[in-house]
Length: 203
Image (cartoon, rainbow, N blue to C red):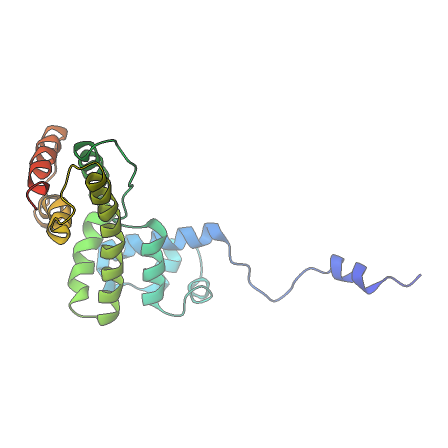
């Protein structure tokens, strides 16, 4: 009996097409961050990145046409500097949670090495500048929601200087942890939270 063509279609396995495996993509992202932290973005070698991930260079180019697009998607994949925006019930509690989450991100050893390099590369590359701008804007959107909640609770003025407030929220942690390479203890974080709570009410 002649088999129906639909039966043959069901039995036939695809050939010649590479399958994009999510676990390999994750390994490539991790390998990129490790290489980036060691060498700086300009010196990143895609051959070395692929080798770290246990793959060939072709695995990268099947996914991304360039090192820049690879880096952009890697950054987006971990949402570097994006912070949770869960309502904690008060401005002071929201600030405390924002600082805690920010400190957790900035304490990661790869983040501490990559962010300064990313900022430096921004001055050399318009394309990387656009990526960094996107990261900063995504982070600030979480800050805007924090401020919106406080305004709705009548804890802050509706006509406050939002840009100043958002700069104040992030700058102290970035300055100490990234620029100076120091850490914040829990008690210091609490004191910073109290200071920021007072400062935001004057913005």
